[in-house]
Structure formats: C-alpha cells, structure tokens
Length: 131
Length: 373
Image 1 (cartoon, rainbow over the protein chains, first blue to last red):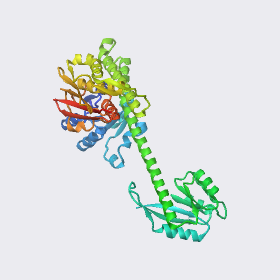
Image 2: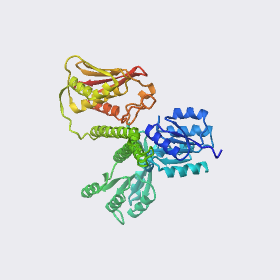
Image 3: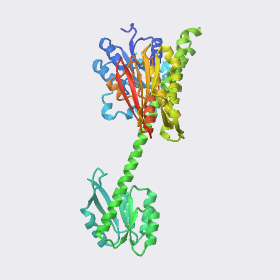
Image 4: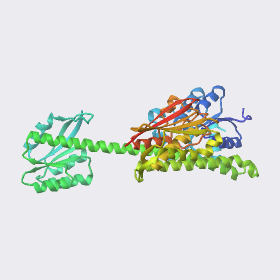
C-alpha cells in the first residue's frame, strides 16, 4: 500500500483551477482523478474510493461542496476531505449562509482558501493522510 | 401581543396611579402592525430614580414630568439623549410652561402633554408614541437587512473577481516554474486561458458599472424618441464577430420604424444582453430571430434562439445577480452572471416586463414588453 501512489479526487467547476490543481497535486507525487461538478463527482465516488478528496464549495449551487462532502462521508467515513473555496473566508460569508444546525453535518476535515501554495498543500495532504 | 415598557416619572403619586389606571389595561393596534401593543408600567418618583431604572432595564417610553424634586425633567432628557437609548420621551408639563415644552421637543422629546390631561388625551398620545416607535424600529430593521443584501452581493462579487485572478495567477506560477519546459509554445494553452479569464473579468466589470448606474440612479437619463430597430441593429453588429464564428444567423423583423421615448444607452444594454445571450447559448449554425412589434400601447421585443435552452428549475433563477446556469453545455461559455439581472432592472425602469420561455435543446425566447409612456 505505502509503495502505491495515493489517489486524490479533485472536484471544481472552474476548468482552469482544476487543471492547475491537477498539475500541482500530480507534481507532489499523487495520482489524481478530476470531476467538474457535484453530479460528476458523485458518479466517480460510486465506483472509486479515493484516499483523499478536495472539493470546491460553489459549483452547481453555492453549497454543492457541502452536500458532496456529506454524501462522500456517508459512503466513505474515513476519507479525509479538504474544502477549497474562493469564497471570502475573511468575511465569513460561506459560514454565514449555514447556521449552526447545518454545520453539524458539514463533514469537511479542512477548509482552505484557494490559491494555496504547493508546499502548504503538500503539508496539509500529508497530515490528513498521516504520511 | 408585544409589550411596551413605559416609565412614569412624576413626584406626585396621584398622577402615577392615575396613569397606571388609564394605561393598565389599554392596548393599541394598527392595520400595518403585526401585533397589538400593551403597556407595562414602571414608576419613578424622582429623576435620579428614573435614571437608575433606565440603566437597569429596557424602557420604550418615558412619561416625564419636568418639575421634580432633585434633577428636573430636562436634565433627565439630556441624560437620555447622551446615552442614546432606543426610546421615546413624552414630557408632561403644565399649561403654563409652553416654553419648556418647546425646549423639550427641541432636545429630543417625542412630544409633550399638557397637564392636567384627560384619559382620552393620554391614550391618544401614547398611541402616537407607540406608532412612532414601531415605525422607527421597523425602518431600522429594514435598513439593516438592506445592508445584509449588499454584503452578500459583495461577497459573491469578490468570489467572481477572485476566481479569474486565481486562475491567471496559477498559470503564471506554472510558467514561472517552467513546469512544461523552456519552450514558450508549450504554454500557449495557458496563455490563451489567462487572456480569456482576463477578458471575462473585464466584462464583469463593465456589467457591474451598468448595474451601479441603475442602482445609484445617479446617471442622468437622456430621454428622447429613439428608433428601436436602429438600436437592435447596433447590438447585432456588435455581436457579429462572435456570430460569424459560430455561424449563427441573426435576423430582425419589424413593422416599420418603432419609436420610443427612452435613453438610447439603456435600450442598447437591453438589446445587447438579450442578443449576445442568444448567440452565446446557441448551437453552431443556429439562428436568432429578433422582432420588434409595435402594438401602439406597448412595444413587444422578442429575441428567440435555437440554442441549448433551460430547465424549469434554471428559469426561476436566471434573473438573479451572478446566477449562471452551470452544466456541461455551458462549460465553455463565459459570462458575468449579471446580464439578465441588469436587463430586467433596466426594463422595469420603463415599467416594462420581461418573460422567458425555454425548452432544453430547442431554444429560448425572451419577450420584453415596454409600455408607451
């Protein structure tokens, strides 16, 4: 297992961002699978168990990432999930929308602002994968 | 039933118990209020005592006598103003001291009531105070909600502006690290995509300026008789480079010249948005039919395309700010998500309306009705 490259699923509806993330994560030595929407990601998850997933928050809907995260955790409770968003974390917008009742079922392990540096991302992934 | 807390400040116990009797089981209701108000009465015999109470509990209305043993009513009023409590003060004064009453209202008392007063006079006064408080609080609440909407708009906007910056920045970093090697040609796709994202950002900013003009209402409108056919043709010409690329044929049908008293720039925004959408969301080799139908009372403009169409669910959202229909068919199409929101606001400024009919994979028709005068 440890010899095999870990598989990371990256989901983002911004094709450019997805392309860049794919290149970055591959560069870090992981295998990558991509999906461009919540719906497409759900299909991938039916047949694939990634070692870790990185979801965009706003896709088809402004909370697509949360819903995807919920569904993914229901299927694979042990799979770490990183929520990446360009939503302004500093204004608290993404959390404003979802009250405490909802926060309970948001299952992401980590929130990241988009535009993260490669070495930071590597560190976070390794932490979550316990590498 | 909501309760207003009324603080009675008077050194005469008789007046205090009189007011208690009059307001104790009294309630006021208005058609525009959600609920009736009743009154919880609190007594204070001196100004000092009144201030203690104000510091300890919520008070909505103060019935304030001026002649008090220690500090007088005007001083209590000054204290209340300094603390900027959310309450209304009604001064109780004797007929003889009208000057004082005027001074009190100038100092922020809501109104004054001459003493002695009848139960009817007191009830009428308290009714006015209740109405005033209700409206004041409601206005403040609505203003706060308005700010909330503004805040959400700005948050989404910052998301829309950050996405292209992230994309371009990401590509530049990849080039800086020479991830694809030394040859510049290998980065062609990244360069093209960066330029496309910057163009999208520019369009967003242009749309934003249109939107700001509508919302601030500051832009001076130049109303004159304009010919809508000419405006439509300008918009069609603007889209030509793109329609040629997709081989989409745009045609215009009118019954003669159609004049409308309107601002040419604003009408151009309406036509530009509708026609550019009809081309953008069309299939290759499709067509766009623009028609201007002068029905005297109103002018009906329709823009029909043979494009990808929309689902019922999509149709409900498309006039909202920043809404873009995201699916595999729209993936390659860029847009700010503001065009239709702007168009609708623009049309509504002319007391017009906009409707849309759409069938997935068949096409979409937007119909704008503009009433004359």
